[in-house]
Image 1 (cartoon, rainbow, N blue to C red):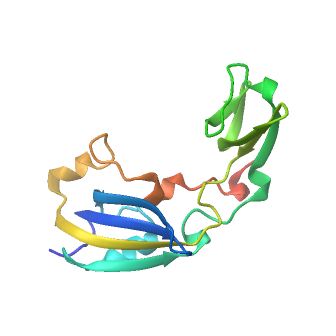
Image 2: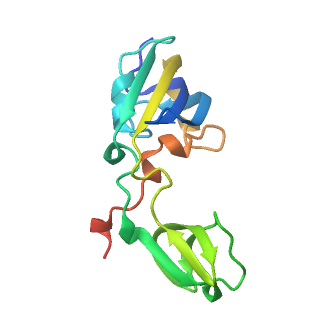
Length: 169
């Protein structure tokens, strides 16, 4: 069976930066094809492929996690985090203020916290090596996609992309 809309596709994925550094891998990843669950360029490259086929796809930053947006950096005093703060923590609210997107703590120094609203891979070109492992009709199995049993990793999810600053009031 070929990869087509409304098929459950199992793939093995390796993601590299353009300097050929391996960033992520996923084996036996299942997604519902044709529903925008993964990057459109990758979905298009997989269209019509059969189990055993491989594809390599390169994405420019705007096709993946967007260009790096320096305006998505925020500096706050450490006192804004009364419960403590650590590098790597993510916040959607600080001291009762709802933020326009999730912000990740990237640095803490001298009582100041640096938060970054960009996706960690923003501004980076990516290369994906993908092998089609299995293709089957979705049928009732399509209900499993998106639940806790079948989760598309964030490095392939379109929804993990940062909010476009144009859409922010």
